[in-house]
Image (cartoon, helix red, strand yellow):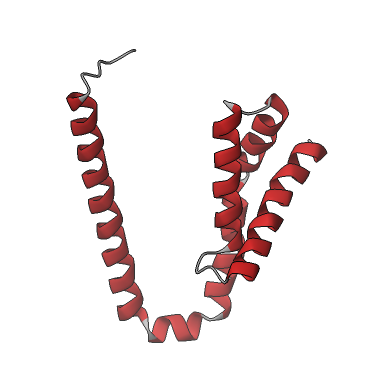
Length: 121
């Protein structure tokens, strides 16, 4: 598990370095994740240890929301004073995410239909 975790952190580090060197407008972990995806795609899959480690991290993903919740509680006075713009941002971003997901799904369904894809279940 330690080796797989090291691989994940190395990809994040490489992403951070590239963002700093190339002044990219993306977060370093996102660039690292894209590089990891590209290398896994070129390799044709992922090692069992990397899969197990990633699944273990995903099982505990909810723990990453604890600092955000603590931040909201620490700044509760400010959040309560600006509840209307926060509510609008939450509703607008949720609606946008749903719309983009629906449009993407429609495009993928059309693309699959155009190539004569069939369900393989």
